[in-house]
Amino acid sequence: MFQDQLVSYSGVQPSGNLTIGNYLGAIRNFSSYSEKYKCFYCVVDSHAITVRQVPADLRRRTYETLALYMACGLDPEKNTLYVQSHVHEHTDLAWILNCFTMFGELSRMTQFKDKSAKHSDNINAGLFTYPVLMASDILLYQTDVVPVGIDQKQHVELCRDIANRFNQLYPDTFTVPEPIMAKSGAKIMSLAEPTKKMSKSDENANAVVYILDDKDTIIRKFKRAVTDSDTCVRYAEGKDGINNLMTVYNAFTGKTFDEIEREFEGKGYGDFKMAVGEACADALAPVQQRFKEFMADKAMLEAQMKKGAEEASYVARRTLSKVQKKLGFVQVR
Ligand code: TRP
Image (cartoon, rainbow, N blue to C red; front, side, top):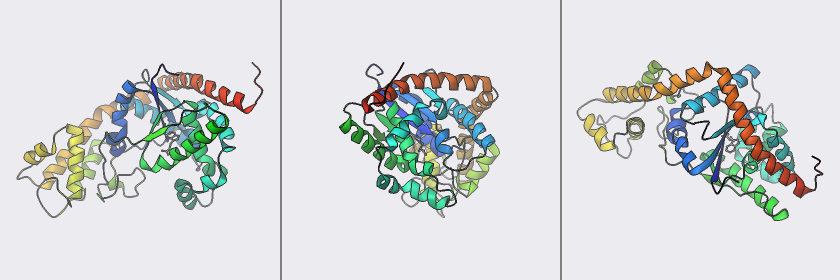
């Protein structure tokens, strides 16, 4: 569909609370994807309402998510950035694919089990069929690769099963996508428990550094980071806290581990943590500045949303129409 270009598709929750783990591990590298792939990034507001949302917050976060991705370097001229509910083909296809997805398959999804335990007062049908909407997102764009974290891999596997099932009944309908782990980036661990991945939903506020944290907050969090009783800045087994801080420092400054060890020879952890905090805050400053500018210009963000939705609709409409034709729906135009 895109002159032999492969398609990459990713959905992004409208949370606005992205961490430096998201940034260093994935988002920062997304801008180079557009050299290799035709890339779609979708703010998935329809997915978000499977759990209760405060309307004003959802609205603000939808703008914020778009602004933040742009601030992190995603160029809307090179990528298609849009909002899920602006392209109604997603929910149209989701209904159809619901009829090709088994109750048993959805019951086995670990995220459904986790979320229904967490929101036991609201186990709605949308929460259950969440992966079908996600499959629709992906399949509408004839996607080749889906960059996801490990927690979404099961959903992409289900998407592949649905696509294969549909293709068996109606040949050559969907491209069957591959999940890819964005492993070009660094894996950043929690500052409080450095054996655990940094997670935006961690209850311990000191464990996580957000892209939008101000400089003082960033430095305070790094100052409190868990280290060890050794006093030497070096990368070694068992020194999870220091290893993690070295990984962060390396990712923000480009200095190798050897260089970092030499830089902090004979210095204490206090100096090192301070340097990591400074490097992080300095590197994020331009991202935060751009974010602020973009958020102050709602008209620009809305124009981008509109442009993205038009680009996305063009592709989505073609796939949906093909599916409807194959199923025997009458098309009058
Ligand atoms: N479920 C994904 C998450 O929670 C978001 C998502 C929705 C997505 N649709 C997608 C990711 C399509 C990749 C492709 O992170």
